[in-house]
Image 1 (cartoon, one colour):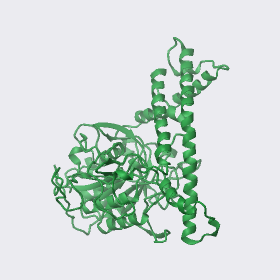
Image 2: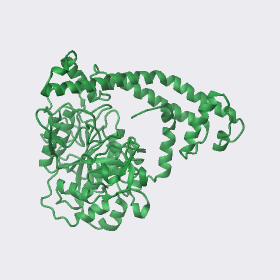
Image 3: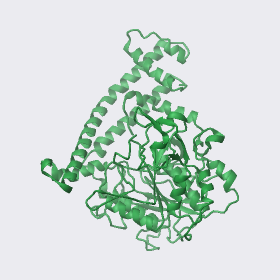
Image 4: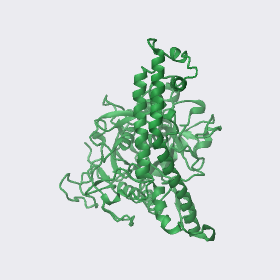
Length: 553
């Protein structure tokens, strides 16, 4: 989340409403030629190609913040460990996890769950500060020099961002007072006149500063094409956004950039041992399952049940693995979640999370290699920093590292890195926030205004590469379900080669620059269900369907 100015806070709700207004709730399922939206042609594929074809149920593991397993659109598609007896307190299947019916929570323990956590940069800063705080880096070489350079980088990031958060938090009250006063001034100036764009913009502000600010705010709101019901409704939205801003900056100060904050004690594990097994609990939802529930719905919300929305894949079971707190995930938990998913029958793992530093990449690399050996496809969100992943760090990543911490130049063959797409054509095709990379981002998928499930039987739009990744995971699940002899690597190759290519010039996210869309990813394309299925029909697989511990309701 990035809040750059008070105006962004004021306009966030208006822009959210505009997005919902302009894009149909199911736009990511639609076909660009037939429907006019840059969806992945899911609906077309089911209607024209898959109808009448047999499919095999596949398991997709969602490593995320947790999932509302009782959601009306998800309860029927949750993975069930048939070898475990619910609630008996016994590890019936002897897999090291007690009562793991729908998956596991790696950031919980007997005494509760981790909610807030620090950023990885903060943890690395604390670790290296004790070693390098008073060291002259110019005299260092090799591994120690690299560690010192990392320390310098995280020190700058942690200290400057914490200071910025403190400054922004101190300004929030004054900013809210300014905005509310400006909106009140507009309301008073209108008097009995109808609240319309024309009447608002016709107000003579003169030297009245509040009216000047108010007109500027309303000009921006109206400029988004949004029809605001009243000044009162806009003030309510602003207050909600301000409350969110206060919470965001407070959390950065108290938790994210606080080296002394350690929520890990609630888990009771040996954090120094990345290969420890069996820690955690079976609270699949945790304190805040918004993100994981939204991701799961995109992949597999029950299709055709006439409620809520339809997921991409129609014969899938969701295995929930909670490993992502409000803060940065930890490598130990990610590695163990991958291994759990592989050992318990997942064919695909969705990972909608990321960070700029890695604590123990070796442990994650081992888990990724294990998944590749067991023929499991990993789908990962490229990130939302509008950065080039070819030149900026983003973890976890598919390039393996040497023991000295340097890249090997070798990559995981079972990994897909996904950028986010908007529904718009032309220059605005890539999402403004999406990371990209000609070498390190594989393809793009819809990731703006994605309508999906959230806790308590509700639904909402959300956006990010976090939403684009499960779209791809869902398409991959269709391939592995309807063409069960396809390997993970074959599935990746089909998705890449069948992606819809575009050489149209687009805005580079985060830059005032335009390049052909094909330059933003390895494939140069957008994932498409129809073209992927048609290509899969031509491919002969080379493996048997593997056995999975699933009970299908």
